[in-house]
Image 1 (cartoon, helix red, strand yellow):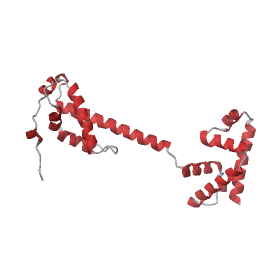
Image 2 (spheres, one colour; image 1 turned 120 degrees about the horizontal axis):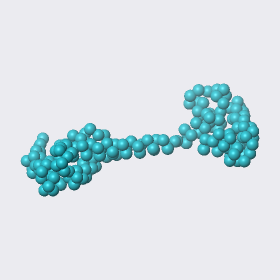
Image 3 (cartoon, rainbow, N blue to C red; image 1 turned 180 degrees about the horizontal axis):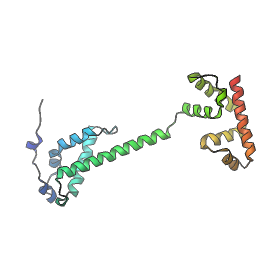
Image 4 (cartoon, rainbow, N blue to C red; image 1 turned 60 degrees about the vertical axis):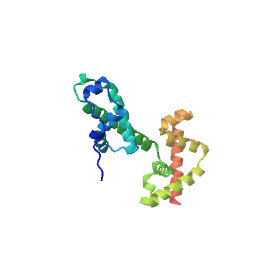
Length: 197
């Protein structure tokens, strides 16, 4: 196994050289490559591979070189490490927020049918448990939808897709609240009859 000592290959730049702008980006990056590797090992970013992380570290190195000042009273290595850790934390935060959004928005069609069927069906009419109940409720729900009147389908659609309550549905359809309650009752009755058959 060949080990490479980066201190012998590249010139070591002092904090004064860096503050005065007397440096080469590639040489400074090579000088701090062990630091980059140690920081990269601590952060698991699913969307980035090793090359991507090293490229991000090079960009952070460039920005750190541009903003470093001796008045900060810390070494460039500590300044670069701090910037690199903050950048990786930002990448991690961004990655996690994207995952949360995808998980919260995405719903499978089967899950939607299961939730809506269970929402409409009265719990006392469920005669099966587990997978059988889910499967039968999906089939019965789909069959019942074909038997609903246009008004019942409209009310059911508003209730399931927009999660509006009876008062809001009545206001939107410009009908009395009693008619909405009767419609809900008719839908439940048709589902019950389907389950009993």
